[in-house]
Amino acid sequence: MLTAVSNTIHMKKLVLPLLSLLMLGCGDDTLPKPKGYLRLEYPNAVYEKAIVPLPFSFDKNKLADPIKTVKSSGNTNGIDIKYSSLKATIYLTYKAVKNDNIDSLLRDAQNLTQKHTIKADEISQKEFLRPNDNVFGMLYEIGGNAASQSQFYVTDSTKHFLSGSLYFYAKPNYDSIYPASEYLKKDIKRIMESVQWKNE
Image (cartoon, rainbow, N blue to C red; front, side, top):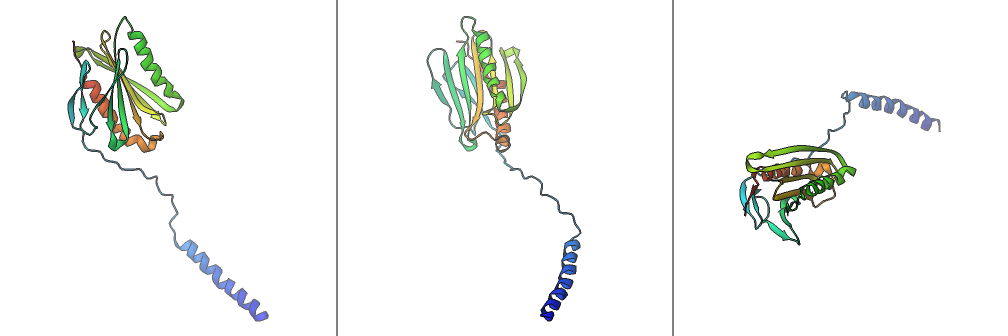
């Protein structure tokens, strides 16, 4: 019995110093790993003129699927620019300006953006002006886990009003959709820069 106790004490005397040496021997402080980010690379955008059966034209990215025109009643028509590879769509809605309804069209476009304030971290707005082509508008960039990351409108204020929204087919998670969102914001800016009204 004494031998067993003696052996246990002797083992503790050997094991404790060895464990201490192992723990101190590494010398380097343990650091947490940095956060990893997805590195998603998209092809350089190649644009072509989109001819649609509506009173305007614009440039679209060739990466997008063929354009789908959506007809609705009254003076409202739509275009869906779908990006299957990015699981996203830019929805365009065209309305004719009639009977001085420009104020209500502007108010509706701004109210639609404000609905995202519940989930948005921030909403920044950039005025857009092309006076030589009678194109005036606003681009809203929405940060955070909002359903839409970008919204915009352009108008000539007398005949034409075009609004647009970017939506992804996924639960809004700003970190995961950020690269695709930034890529598509460039396409939205190109739409705004290239839209031409058809004076019929």
